[in-house]
Image (cartoon, rainbow, N blue to C red):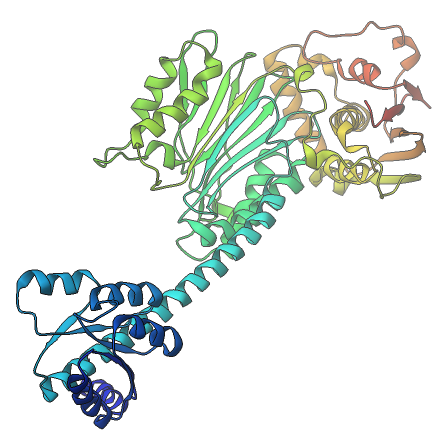
Length: 581
């Protein structure tokens, strides 16, 4: 305390007007004390025994109590205990007035709630000093109580704000298919809010995106960045954008809005149930593990990229790893909280223990729960030192997934355009640089109730558009795809012809008619190419093998009708749908 503050404190003490209760059964002693205290400018209440002292305390709530130890009716010890109980959290200093000298009696005074003693005969100077000292102590206690109440109120307000923010965050971050039957996940935050997030969304093609992110730091500052990530992820995933497009957009957004030093370590997988494959991207986060159910082996996919939000778009790398999966194979994603979970000795759980648990589990279905229990056993503490987040995604067949899109995918029949048609023409400059499928898919998904069929619709549009562009406009032949080398030549030739394309167009004619509990979607894709003799191929068998020629037969299995028109450069498909499909 500096000199100015000390002077102010002394001034407050000198001018402080206190209310003091004096309880003493001796009339002369009570009169002497009363006179001394009043001369100091304080208000005095007097009592002749302990019970009277208690009654006055209840009525007047004095600031300091001078209490004789030995009194009739209720003695000073009992009166002190009662007064202390009545005072509650407030500090009311009790000074015992006593002629006792033995240590046991003095200890009893302290045990009863007294803070000090004043021996008879009374010394005026000592009494004044003790009153000032205890008044200062009482004032300090009141300050501490006030600060405690303010902190408690502030903490309650902060918790309420975080709970409201978390509710908003959960509504933004978890509208997808995170509860799909092939996903297990653990989000165990240190606080109400955290910087870890797990997102999952079905793709229009029927596949699934899964994203695990871990922002630097903890609590609300880390969670703020999670909201734009969630909005971008779900918005683009449902429109059919690729893994690379989504990551590039998230990185661009985070780079623009986050301060230096805040970024998002992440891993993302693009799961195809139809092709039994997965595309994996890992940036600044622990290895993604692939568990092979057949061989019981584990493969590591290491991080080869910087976290999201670190570098500009022109330096951001979206190269990914493509793996083939069998049914029952598992992909596991983690935040560093699992690997770095420490025990009382500061020893981390570590990757070796993760592998030990995985390889030591007989039934692969129990791997996730066994890792969770092993981490809890290792830490052995109620409080976490980091956010724990992990995800397990199992490869299943497309039939097993069905039309599960999660709660957020069920728009059903409320609102939106139902009865409409459109024509969309794409000319050479657009065909070279633009993929129209996400835009058209997004437009169709605005039809109420149509979203659960987005996988089939995207497949139909994709096949029709590819045929119109590659075979109709560019005159490419599928026979080239008969071998792996032919595939390479096919796409090299496709790029060359597309670059030199300078005339012609592709038109989408789309018509939607609502019916009871559904609708009829008619799509005609027309190109300005030469067409072909489709009548000669109408009797061709459904082709299910080889590298090409499976598109139209596949569409036939999804639609009410598929037919060629004109000179073979128009294809019309009619897709019937219902909300209970």
